[in-house]
Length: 375
Ligand code: AHG
Ligand code: MN
Ligand code: MN
Figure 1 (cartoon, protein in one colour):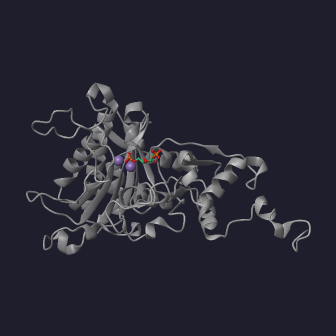
Figure 2: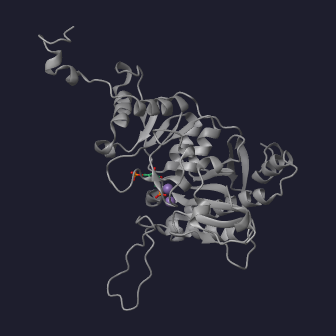
Figure 3: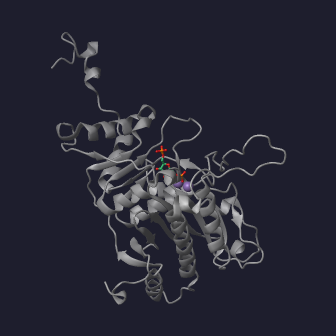
């Protein structure tokens, strides 16, 4: 298609801004800086082994250390890949200088990153997972970056008060923009600024994101689900029931066959669901009593949740809308279910309902030959 017929991300943002003449333009520049970080990460990912970016990031070697250094771990105790650390640096460098931000929070940093004194502060906060699905680096499977933009309190933006952890603890409903980049066979940038979800594909010749998927909508019904089934013994009964009913297929209560996918890269699952429908579950489970779920509220669940809702889908903790959860901590884990609206609502309904009686329940003495309830 000729150049003139597709908007670039820059053109799209300028045209969106024209609809709000009072807007300062800071916001557009911020989104373009985020997109620049994503383009830089896409290049690193594309070089893989040739760029020396695969494998674990090693902790700095202490003086006199006898053994080889071990892999570094992040604030959540997860091993850091080299590309986790590189991607985090790319996000910081691309976004700290522009004067649009008052601070940043990332999966890879225990504490908020305040804007260095030599750069102006701005009125937004940026929260991100610099590389999602990073366990897939070494096997050449899709990964992504996820981001969320929040407003900074006015006194922090103006420099009258220092940035605090509490400034970031805003429910997902407060997000002014959210999106992700996916590093797959093509690199794409999916964005919502609160008026639908729009998808851009990186044109490798121009180094520009071009609008290829305007107004993406999640199909309301689906026959595809995604869950890490190796955790099934830790699932709560409503999740077990939902998955069992999917697996029962045509002859079960759903009356249709389901397909299952698990990429272990939430961005890639979210992207598939945006493109062809489906439901994703990383529910609260009993695997590790100290963490109710694996995914993080601020920089994984909330941005993907806003994207899903803006695309006509739904995002939930299993019990209610994830965007309404009041965060208690920067790295707070949460159960997450998202995708086609009808499926997510069904899962919520199963969490509300008492469990249906199973055949075994009817085989108790109350239901036997001489019982009251014999049919
Ligand atoms: P990250 O790479 O940022 O740590 O996130 C990985 C997440 C998510 O992308 C994915 O859905 C999930 O972890 C995979 O979990 P399993 O290892 O249980 O498959
Ligand atoms: Mn992640
Ligand atoms: Mn990550």
